[in-house]
Image 1 (cartoon, protein in one colour):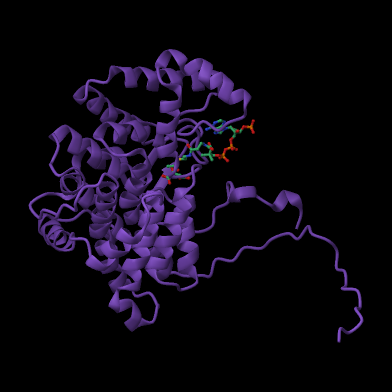
Image 2 (image 1 turned 135 degrees about the vertical axis):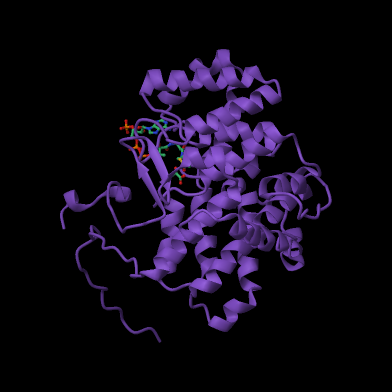
Length: 380
Ligand SMILES: CC(=O)SCCNC(=O)CCNC(=O)[C@H](O)C(C)(C)COP(=O)(O)OP(=O)(O)OC[C@H]1O[C@@H](n2cnc3c(N)ncnc32)[C@H](O)[C@@H]1OP(=O)(O)O
Ligand SMILES: O=C([O-])CC(=O)C(=O)O
């Protein structure tokens, strides 16, 4: 094997097929099971998109009603998970809390013990819906306990996003806010073989259980080169302060060879297909909360980055400030990504399982040549 055969970061390497989504950098498009993500964001609720990703088709009205009934029946935070969260220090990053909580959900799933860790597609469907229903409870409760607030019980008369916002803030915000949040959930749901999804597939390929794969995926998503970037964008905005300081800040950051969070993408080199839709949702929030200053900072940094480096924003760039305006603590942003991507991850876990091959690439050794341990005199 030569150095030329090695593709660092697997860049450009096609490792398997998938029928779940198609990312097309040439046309800047993203299809979920064939549907353009923009059309789904404009016409569907997040629950319908979850159903689509798992089942390959959008639900009929009857199927949607059944699915929603099931999801709504599982929304209350399991007391065992709550007890473990309560034990975690407030200094723990919310991503560590979510990762731990999912691990607890796995460890307390009785069906997992019965099947001895071997994945079963039917059981995994149920587990995926259960995680979809439990994650909002976990994330909402974590935000509240950090603010010294009590847990809010779920409501089964509300759709997914409205219920989550109710559980987080104790009230359902204006419809504009609910819709913007729901759009973000749809846009974050799935993106082919990104690092966290690939992680989930690697774990699944060993025949480990769904919760192990999801827990590992959460770890992969935490990093600032992947999901952690939405949180990092907000830190950058705070560091810059106001739009008039953005260009000078960027010039210094680039001289210091810093990565500007929320910009660039491994696959899209001419802009992320999801950004215009999320930017439109952000604009509705900017109008709702009357924050033209944020719009100005957003636009100035975007233009400066394009002028200096020709690098465009990715989805984390508009979603960071959108989540800030809705009122989430900055550290909560990546757990919101988890709440959405659970749909894509679990769809990929089931796809991997249905046509499995152990994922085990090769490496080219470049350490010392074979050598031998010097003979020692035998110690008494
Ligand atoms: C939902 C998501 O997960 S989307 C991704 C979220 N992540 C971020 O926003 C983090 C910031 N962005 C990045 O670090 C990168 O763009 C990545 C990791 C997303 C993609 O990286 P790669 O595909 O490996 O691109 P690569 O690192 O080869 O970039 C090519 C060039 O552009 C530069 N570049 C790419 N992104 C950025 C950035 N955000 N800031 C500054 N320079 C950048 C690189 O330094 C490199 O320059 P060089 O050729 O002079 O060394
Ligand atoms: O595809 C990627 O590499 C990262 C990304 O945008 C996502 O996971 O949504």
